[in-house]
Image (tube, rainbow over all chains, first blue to last red; front, side, top):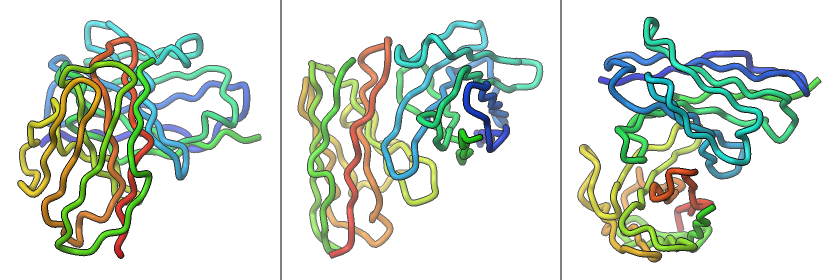
Length: 117
Length: 108
């Protein structure tokens, strides 16, 4: 059974960096593709970006200039760093798995990140 | 970016009703269209992938159809546990994947 668990600060100050980690269990992180998806309260879903264990990345063009994603295969984890955050980055952030076909097979439970001073 | 438009934005239905949700893309997706169900406070759950393939473990009352720009999700007989928000998602463009705005299915 594949499980994903997000972790990281729930509160980030404006202009600082939002950093989240997703810990994967039940499958090797080397095998699949890994995405972050976010959802502001009461709103729809926005795909943030995708990373593979080889380091290949695809980012949402609207976030690309501020975004870095990476994988730590030794810990079976992948991470997100979003720089220069503002209130519009306040959302629940989900990590998710896809098998390369672009649909999200498994999701973490989500973690709420609030950008506020 | 490929824009995804769902209709309706919300609907009220009764248990046992047949429910249809539509998703329209701003350009052809072939069959690269997926459907998710999201309940309050929970992560989305994959229902349908590649327009019409039922994800393992999903009840057969859910079905998907369509190709190109127009797609539908149908619930043949609405059950109490189906009251939720449904999202379509295109996986055609590897530059960026996009979701529809969601359709909330409420109890009449």
